[in-house]
Amino acid sequence: MDIKSQKKDVLSALGLGKLNSGTYYGIWAETHGRESIASISPIDGEETAEITLASDDDYEKVVSAAEESFLKWRDIPAPKRGSIIREIGEELRRNKSNLGRLLSIEVGKTLTEGEGEIQEMIDVADLAVGLSRQLYGLEIASERSRHRMIEQYVPIGPIGVITSFNFPASVWSWNALIAAVCGDVVVWKPSSKAPLTAAAITKVAERVIKRLKSPEIFFLAAGEGKKTGNMMAKDRRLPLISFTGSVPTGKRIAEGVAGRLGRSILELGGNNAAVVSDRCDLKLAAKGVSFGALATAGQRCTSTRRLILHEKVYEQFMDRIKDIYRRAKIGNPLENSVLVGPLIDKDAVAKFRNAIEEARKQGGKTIFGGTEAEISGFEGGNYVVPAIVEASPDMDIVRKETFAPILYVFKYRNLEEAIRIHNSVPQGLSSSIFSNDLKEVEEFTSARGSDCGIVNVNTATAGAEIGGAFGGEKETGGGRESGSDAWKAYMKRQTVTINYGNDIPLSQDVSFPV
Image (cartoon, rainbow, N blue to C red; front, top):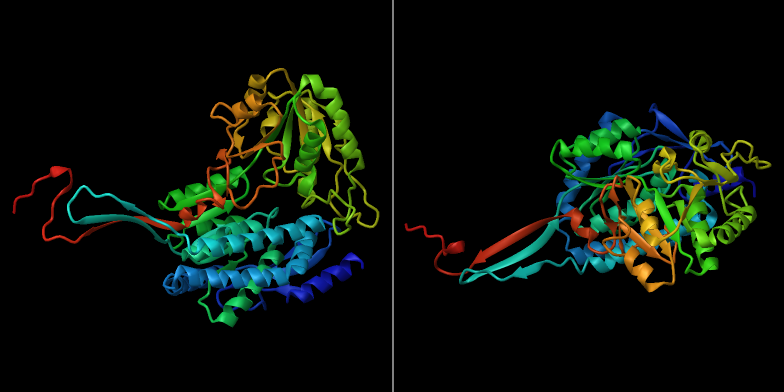
C-alpha cells in the first residue's frame, strides 16, 4: 500500500479527516472559517491533513471548562479515577496499531518505534491505575499532647502540558495520566509539528469519558507555539506547566511561570554521552551506542551525541560502529527493514548540515556520513546519512545539542578524564558507561561521576523505562516525570495538625497566658 493510501486509511480509522478541529473543551470547536496548519509528513514532504488552531476565545473556553471540570473530578475518589484511566488504557490498546502508524506518518518514526510509543502510554496508564491506590502521605509525631500531625497530598488544579514533536504521545501520558489519578485535569498544547497525533489521542480519551459519563479530564488547545505557550505560562489558572522542548524556549516558559510564582516541570535539551571502557563487552557496547545514536534518527532528547572511547579500544570499536552504520537502512520508516527514518523537516536537515560544517571549521573530521540521502520515491522527504565526527571535547559545537544523528567521538586515557569530558557540557539529561569493571561502574554512578539525572550502565542513553522518574539536571531543567514519586509534582503537599484535647499547648514550650 502506498503512503497516500496509508494516510487516508489511518485517518479514517481514528475518526480524523482532511480538516480537523484543534480545540476540545468537552465539545470540539467548529472548523469552519478558522486558521489552520497542515501536518506535513517528513516521509514524503506531503500534507497528511490540516488542523485548526485555537483562537484566543477558544483558549479561554478551554481553560474555563477545565477549571469547572476540575471541581467535579477532584471529588471522585482516587481509586475510581484510576478505574477510568484503566479504561482509557484499554481503549489505547484497541487503537495501538492505528495510533502508532499515524505517529510514524506524522513525525517519521519507524513503525516499531511508533507502536512502542503508544505502548508506553498504555504502560503509563497501568502505572497510574496502581498509583491511584497509593497516593500516600505520612503521620508525624507531634511534640504536643493530644495532637496528631499528618502530611497529605491533594489535587493542585488544572495543569498545562506542552509537548514536543519527537515524543508527541508518550510525554503527554507521563504528565496527563499521572496527574489525572492525582485529581487534576489537563490542558494540552501539542507541538505544531504533531497536532494530528494529539487530536487522535484526545478522541480516544473522549470516547471513554463520554461512555462512562465522567467529568471531562483532558482538554486540547492546538495553537501557535510561542503565542499559546506563552499564554499558558502566564495563566494563573494553571498552577503547573509541564514543558518539553528546547532550552531557549524552556527558559522563556520558566520565566513566564515564575513571574506568577507558579510551578514548572522542564524537560529540555540533552547532550548525552556514552563512555566505552577498555574493560567492556565491545559487541554489547557497539549495539548500545548505535541504538542511542540512531534511534528516531537522533531526534530523542536522550540520543547519544557524544562517544567517549578508551584509546586502547578506539580503532577496534570504531570499526564495529562504522559497520553498523553502513548496514543501517535509511528510508521510509513504514517499511519494516528501515532503521533510520527522516528528520522532522527541512529546517532540521539544514541544522544537521550546518553543525557538520561548523565541526569541520573547528577542527573536527567527519569519518562517516554527514550528507543528505536521496530515497527513491520519497524525494520530498527529509533524509540524511547519520554522521560520525572525530572531534575535541572543547569544541564549541560539541557543547550544543543538534537534534539530528551526529555522533562526536573523543579518546580518553583514564576514567577521571572520561568523567571530566562527560560533565563538561551545559546539559545533564542521560548518560551511560559500558564497563565490566566494578570500580569503574561505582565511580561513574557515584556523586563524583555522571552529573546527569539518568545514569545507565551497560545500556544505551536512550530508552528509559516508565517506572523511574525521568528528567535531568543543569540546562535540562531539573524536572521529573512519569514514575517513582514524580506524581507529587501534580499535587499540593499539606501538613495537617489535629488537636483533640481541651487546651491549646504551643510548640517549642511557648507560653501564651490568656
